[in-house]
Length: 163
Image (cartoon, rainbow, N blue to C red):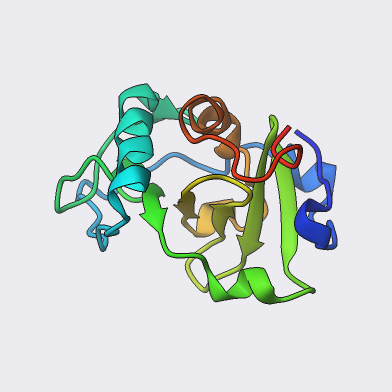
């Protein structure tokens, strides 16, 4: 993993932060609830392909998909890690001060939130969002397990920026 400057953004997340160990693996026992995206048909097809490639575990956490069930969403660790595919382009992508990282060849925009970081792919034909809970406030390591499936199933929308 390495920090880069995707789409001209400052790389404010250091490599040391990217390599921090997962800070706990407890679960609440309750499935998370998330809004299911409504992408156009072509983008939904990329998301359906991604759904078939997602791992059973991410950062050592078992798969536990959020409610309502959908091929456009996935989760691990009872809401600790939640993926949504086909989300709208985040407004923050227009901010020249937005932070970006590259993890195993996939570029992401980082948005800190009160509950933990939210990361959204950039330069891909549909946006894939990964929400991490507060234990990942300084650790985006779970993206290492998700980057390869995203790279395989969601084509680059702006060559050569994806590679």
